[in-house]
Image 1 (cartoon, rainbow, N blue to C red):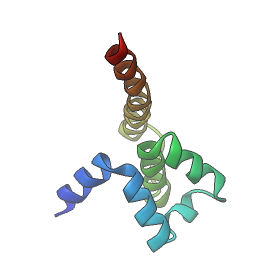
Image 2 (image 1 turned 60 degrees about the vertical axis):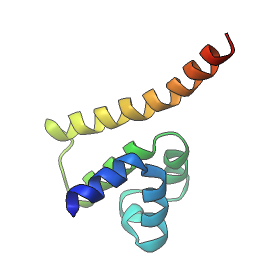
Image 3 (image 1 turned 135 degrees about the vertical axis):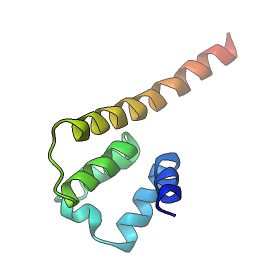
Length: 92
């Protein structure tokens, strides 16, 4: 069951962010305010989830944890750029 939850969080990070935001104060412990989670929801949802997990579980920002955070940023930024690539190739 935990593996399925992780797969769903990675597949649908925006839905996971909404569910976490409205059902708990998990994001409030990691972020002080509303603007950063809102920007994370729009631009980097997976990175926002990973960062909140690292803060709430008191994980250090070094080694494997830093690698996980960097991979989350790459996945989020890659998702933003691929939409533009496919839009351009469709009309050419």
